[in-house]
Length: 201
Image 1 (cartoon, rainbow, N blue to C red):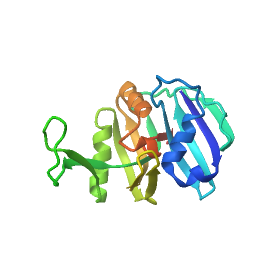
Image 2 (image 1 turned 60 degrees about the horizontal axis):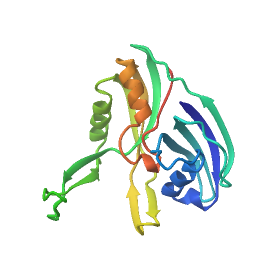
Image 3 (image 1 turned 135 degrees about the horizontal axis):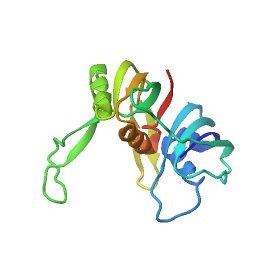
Image 4 (image 1 turned 135 degrees about the vertical axis):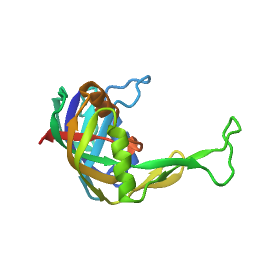
């Protein structure tokens, strides 16, 4: 894997969905490829965004909207009982039955995602994500500025309320934990959620 830092400029910085589309352009064109990167906007205003990205392929600076790009190999070698500081911007949600009575293509009641609101629900959500591979030792939960986005192709607007998790964890199952980090945690990955950053405690 690779870990990259970059600065993006232009109107795309105002819309997390457009940030995601711009990042796609940093990789060699492959019609069969699925998204194999995660990212987080570290700092941003209406014209500039500093971005951290984790990817399976090494990005290439082929976008006029990217001013700088620095990449390094990210081997991600962990060991059992290792204690690490972590930072995660995520979108904690739960799935409920749609109360409007809509049906799926198979005739089943449609389900929809709704955000979790309370801090204790956020904590339980993250603990469930780590259940098979890590233990939380300390945890701080903070809300951050909502993400507002527009999908031009669908002419659809939306809002995501991300949560910042940070603290100290202990690794229990290194291989399972590495798989979780590579996959990303929770939904809304196309909007900058799910990238787990680790550092020595």
